[in-house]
Amino acid sequence: MKKVLLFFFISVGVIAQNINKEKLDKYFLQLQNNNKVLGSSAVLKDGNIVYQNAIGYADLAAKRSNIVNTKFRVGSISKTFTTVLIFKAIEDGKLTLETSLDKFFPTVKNSSSITIKNLLNHSSGIFNFTNSSDYMKYYTSAKSREELLQIINKYDSDFKPGSKHSYSNSNFVLLSFILEDVFKSNYASILQKYIAKPLQLKNTYVGGKLNVSANECKSYNYAFKNWNEMPETDMSIPLGAGAVVSTPSDLLTFIDALFNEKLITKHHVDLMTTIENDYGLGIFKYPFGKQYGFGHGGGIDGFKSILMYFPEKKIGIATTTNGIGPDFQLNSLSLVLLRAANNIDFSIPDFKEIKVDVNILKSYEGIYASKDMPLKITVKEEEGKLSAQATGQSSFLLTSKSNTQFTYSIAGIVLDFNSEKSQMILKQGGGVYTFTKQ
Image 1 (tube, rainbow, N blue to C red):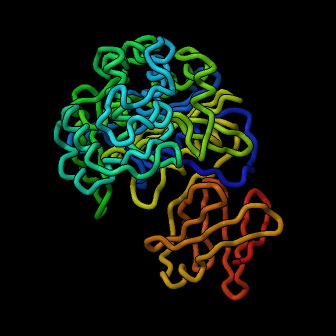
Image 2: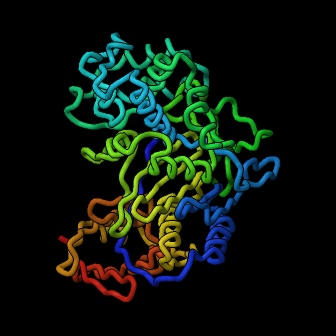
Image 3: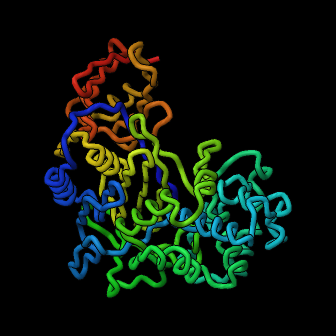
């Protein structure tokens, strides 16, 4: 039940006429052939799904492949569904953003000072119970509402409500219970009534025990050159924080409907997407070039997912995975989909690299700045590889081509290091930029 953030780098590229489905197919085949991803992706433009692909296995032991309708646990993307349901309750007069938590759960610490809005934008100060070491002792077992409340209540608050923001699954478990109380129904039924059925999302629902015969997939991690099946979280625990099962096309139908005011009013969509200290209400903001999109990421067991929608161009991308292989990041796949959706060319990585001595990698660590570019780039050694992170963006792993040259081929980035001059040369899209270590 983790958030997943996307980075973008310098927005340059060769403009193509249409989405390049053939090249995308080759890119996904390369991912599959190199054991990089098990999963499914889709692209939406102007309300229509214009591309879908699925690779890898849904059930490795049975040799059952993922298909575009394979259903995945989407983790914290569930929080955006839950937020929409909260606004449904507000529009029905059952709640307000200022309703205090003590009206429902007075035993929660600081509950009289915690509002619905504080829960939605993670400013409640309530400790994230999934961060506790105890969580790993019980996460595969069913828990009742009473048991979950006891777990949440036993931790001290992290900070005074409203004073800062800190991501906490506890917030959305409590919001799930509040929805059940005000609608007098269980969370699964509420999701079906107000979102899944009106939008005809046939593959979206609250998960239970994993059911491969219903076209759900198992999740895996990759270790020792093998995919290894992961244990499954009992879905009674995350509820509206992370228990939704869906597909990329269903996720895109949902978020397209959200931003086209088919679920809640424009006023409430605007409130959701008002960002404070990087947090919206059950949603996050993602940059791509000069555009900004909104969405959420998720991670639960071996599943990782991302959903984003860019209102200005009515473009959406969604990826659900049940396994991510070595030296690969979901951000990389997302960037390819965004470039393709925006008719910007992209490279297909070959994944070939050499081993560079860790001491050489560490010699490149530091913060680099250029007079030709306003952003700074932080370079770090991470488990025998280099990562780069531009100002205000997420980090990404580089591929070692020599002791001095490293690439991020998806975005066409080449970095050449010169330790003697304490410099890094960045090449992208025909541009050459000199960065000096500070």
